[in-house]
Length: 116
Image (tube, rainbow, N blue to C red; front, top):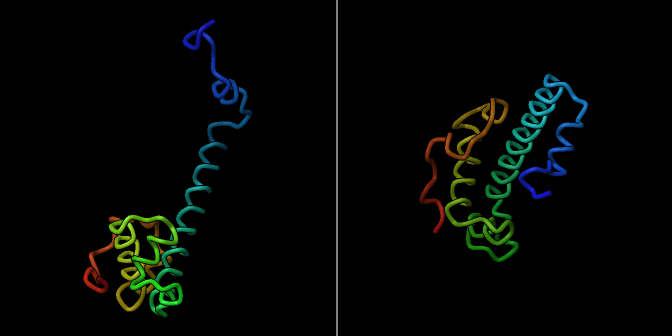
């Protein structure tokens, strides 16, 4: 039997999953909420780390450079991540960390020229 006529192991697992559609949807919603809460907390901690210039302890010249080295981010990803982290913090957006999902493209451009 070739792979086109035989169900794959992953298909078997999917078909044998006992959860109802509502349970699967609920679990996905819960995981989505956890992802968003984790992302908001990570952005908040990055803001604090940058505000305290803790990246200098590792010899970095700026927070973007530290993010790039520490988490293998590209320069543009590090810049966007930090832009969002700063845009969500007071006084610009008091309470921004408590509202809805956080997407890197959703925050206004801010502090683009803060670091080299």
